[in-house]
Length: 270
Image (cartoon, rainbow, N blue to C red):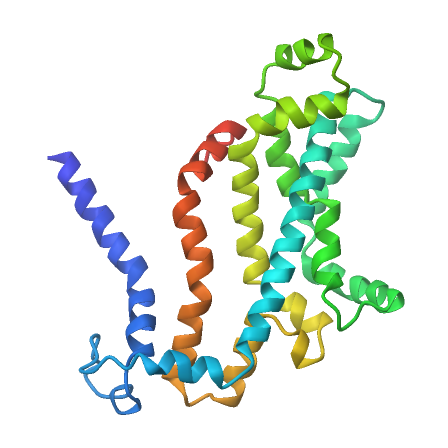
């Protein structure tokens, strides 16, 4: 009797969670006349698929998409490389002040990004990077405290004997990291990659602060501009929003098995 009740509760919560997405999708297919009818219609009488093309072509969303892909991919590569290397150093190398440095690293997670955005703007302005994609890419090449922590926890679950065997075979620390540790870290790296993709793809405040020209806008900033210019075009706004949601949802769907493995491997329980 208990199991059916649990399933019913899960189905109910799933419906509540999916209802806004379903409403967004159906609204993007409605005609302007059906948007404000009462009572509201969940299913439009006619599916207007041309709403997607019309909304996408009203702004240079192809350019915005290109910028978002460049920022996401370039920062993802840097995030994985830097975070993995730093995590390996904290997990395996013993040096004076290691624990203190790790505590300082973790303490930086308590600093809100809103506190650092003005100093960052001043720094990037001094470097001449304002109105370029560099402020959205380069910081990721220096790692992120939370990702470093996750990868360190995962590396500490890997038996040290594997590295000892590689060292006996003549491998140096970097070769051991690349050939032994990295292949075993794949679930954790995918976990970090998915989290970073979601953060980078949906980032709005960073592009808003560092980008000025429309040709440099990312999708989130382009959507905000579209919403400001076409505030009454609700079906167009919903159509563009639906298209922007597809990549992160697809990535999360296909990587969910690795996400579970990555979280389990870090030893963190929630």
